[in-house]
Image 1 (cartoon, helix red, strand yellow):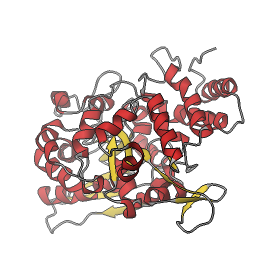
Image 2 (cartoon, helix red, strand yellow):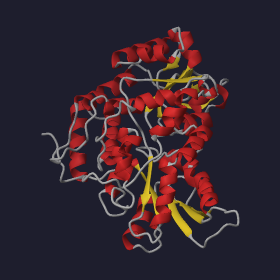
Image 3 (cartoon, helix red, strand yellow):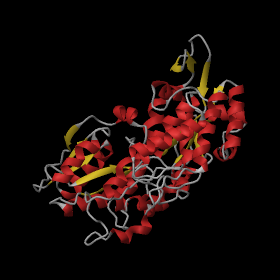
Image 4 (cartoon, one colour):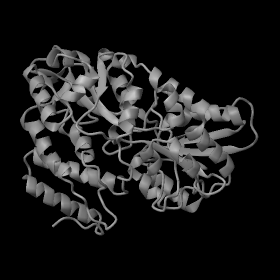
Amino acid sequence: MKRILGMVLTLVLLAGVIAGCSNSASSNSGKDSGDVLKVWSFTDELQEPIKTFEEKNGVKVELTIIPIADYPTKLKPVLESGVGAPDVFTGEIAFLKQWIERDYWENLSADPYNADEWSEDYVPYVYDLGKDSEGNVKALSWQTTPGGIFYRRSIAKEVLGTDDPTEVGGMMSSWDKMFEVGEKLKAEGYRLFPDEGSIRWFAKSEDPQPWVNENDELIMTEAKLNYFDQAKKLREKDYTAFAPEWSPSWLASMNGPIAYNGGWDEVDENASGEKTEVFSYALPTWGLHSVLKLNAEDTAGDWAVTTGPAPYFWGGTWLGVYSGSEKKDLAWDFVKMMTHDDEFLTDWAKDTGDVLSYLPVTNKIKDDFSEEFLGGQNNYEFFLEEAKKIEPGIVTEYDQQIDTLLGSKVTEYVDGKLTKEEAIQEFYKAVKNAYPNIKTPE
């Protein structure tokens, strides 16, 4: 299973896990009514569901997969012109809110869809994200993507005396406690996180507020200001392995020791110089299947997932019916199968481990999951509990760009290129340059 990786700063991994720009017409079993449903997406995760839909409905579905870096620029013109447009298309969290406020997706709150009747069937924040500013449902998602801290059980036992997720989570439940764990790990030759960016999700979600409020004012919370100092402390205390997210060293560090050769950049137990192992990674639900399992073959079974200083979510895939489609009934049937079909979603969850947002199914199956890669832990139940903690209404259309601007200034401060005050002021200037309508703090 391939998981959406189009959230902030994920383009490098996407190149590896998502198929290149291609048109792929799914096969059907000789049953063909002459209808061809066109679906566009930035991810290949719809390939298997499409086969199921074809078999059930006797139609053909043409899936076009476009790399996430090109997806918005290729899709927007066809949606606006209607020429060659898909009947169903997916949206990713980075540009979801922008598209929902336009007329690209059909209003699913209206007849004959009446998706408002399903409001109690989904994890609240997931359902909320698919609504426009007037409360109309434009897109739905079958999945929820809360995050956690994936850690190495063997290292936890050696350094912390336990590998129990609840106990380890208690040791990581505040910034002070997490830094205490970092100190203990360093003393034994390990590193708490691969890099300083690992903590950005906790800094963003510790005081969950939208980046921009209804008055177009930038909301710079105390937690986000503290992110500068927390990242700097990780660097100065040598609690990270200098393995930037999505880099080869970041991926390699999941599988064993990495050697220091001007940077922690390779797995090599025989290399000269200092070596270390990374204890933990901040990743969401899809990180298990699309990141860890693909890059941690030698450490499989030696993992668990637990909580950090604050709950967070990362990514997600929404889909809806194109407002200009001539096959809206068929398109809606596909959306319903993906998001509100008990039989399909039960099989999907059990086959893939995808953590669903659809509560009628999750309530039935959550108690029986056991993940061998995580030493038998029921990560499904864990993530559903984390999803309950996520505040709806905090995502804005500005998030991807502003998150990127903040991260770049935090890095410049951590690298010693700017003072904290200089970094903050430059961040405000960068936001103002990107969005002149936003009022930044003085």
